[in-house]
Image 1 (cartoon, rainbow, N blue to C red):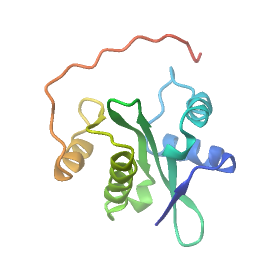
Image 2 (image 1 turned 180 degrees about the vertical axis):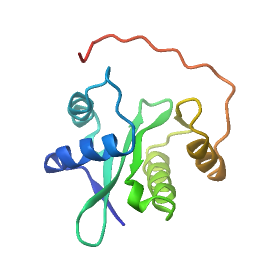
Image 3 (image 1 turned 90 degrees about the vertical axis):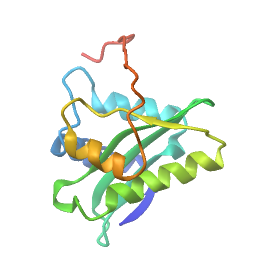
Length: 140
């Protein structure tokens, strides 16, 4: 897998990938999420492509000067369990370390034990914190 920056031409393939991986939710418009990311540190939005150039993975990375974040880490089901997610996380860690980011956070939906196990195998641990959210702009 080659990891490269997201390009606008990748939009439809990324949205389809997110659907295929079960990452989309009715209250989040993936096209708006992509547009928002492209307006803030777009170089931290990456995709993975196979040898034929087909998009097979994505990772949206954030950094606010205090903490880094991973969002929309996705590997197409046909390419899972081959080390691609690990490579994407390591790529994010390198990009953030270069920026001086001291800590990387991520969220996994409750019950997604396979993904929790993946992150634990990469050295991530449950911080025993509660995530609260408030929608400021409705996508629907």
